Image (tube, rainbow, N blue to C red; front, top):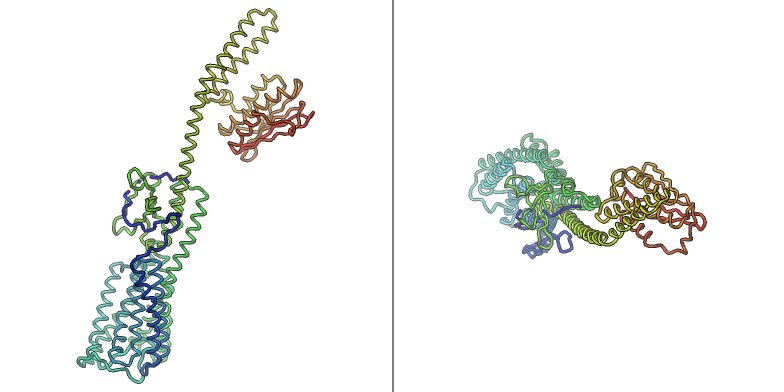
Length: 611
């Protein structure tokens, strides 16, 4: 993956830092850990008190059922809250869920016979009711939005206060409104009463009922609108709660509408009450399911990203893969530029921090405290740190992989530079030694040709002179890093045809669609064939016939040089530097060389190279 480091100020707290091994860092240890431990230990005595109050109650209609119901809600809400708080220390939903459990514990005081304790239990239903609605409107971002939702919360709080205050102050008896908290035969006296105003209490009660029904419909409407308008990450979290915890709202609405608007009979209302009990049981479960679902989705996303790293995607393609895995089409990804201290995207654009209210959040990716990359993602993903850490870890691996490739490319550049310097040095040495000697030889041949008288001798000397001229030209090309001119212009078959005309043995060249493979492949195969032809001319014998076959199969080009000469025993002959060079040339391109020979049966040299 070619991810060269590119640039923006990475200051700020890293949301998804990684440990020294490149793995996602675990949830940080912070000052709230002792408090969480205390609260975890407190669950058992809270449940024990609730069970004792229920078991000893003489005024609840279903004391044991109420005690079990309250105990479950206490343990489930606080347990889910502790898990949230541990997995996501920055989220407010852990403390909120624990607050729900604490309020249920206060509600369970309705089992007490002491009037003050009983009154506290009844009045605790008000904040418990308000907090339940708040959880739905604030999930998953931890803030109530849009503006309509905030107005709904204001209306709900105002309605609860307007009802509970006159009810508590002007009623001789108050009782819980839950399905399991009715009193039989009577409830403890109201210790908070200061006067009696039954008409005021009745009016306040009806107003509170209608307001609560209206708010319930409003919350369902807002939640539905948020589901429709949500981005994929937000919708995933909202749906987990919608099919579990949120079921309480329609159950609550149906029961209260049937009781206070339709005035249905006791039998029907009793059945509907159990709907409230069941959906209340699901309340803490839904938020726990949302968290577990997020962790599972993060694990799958991480696996997908790691698998796709094998495809060595480009930086832009990697951004697309991360966006797809996180279900965030608008995701932006930038890589750190040590020169500027900022971040730039794959196309070179500067990655800027999102503005408040954009619905996006800035996610730095660090390794051992050093900036590596940064992402601008849907703000809902900030509430999924597991998913963010998965994307950060995979991105770190991708960048590290790219850095290794960068080192490899730098190493290859140094090798090529060394080759160029060596070639220049060899070229100077050839110019000062072998080339000068060949030029001198050409001059001597010309002088000798002037002294000869027979035409056949003149022709022989002319051919030798031409061979020396061609050798000088090829020597200059090779020393300068250039390919032979005919090879560069017409390819391997034509270049070998020309060589065949100068070889002292008979050579036939057969081309079966060899074509024009890449330059490096052409050059390698040309010199492999040239070396093999020279070996055949040297060892096969003057009457040997040599056949050169060139072809292409699928994604590989193939060649073979066969002669019907003397042959040899490969086991008895040590491979010379020429053949070793051939094998090295082919291996550098991923190819291979094969030599087959038998004494008296000739020799076959063949090889293939991927195109």
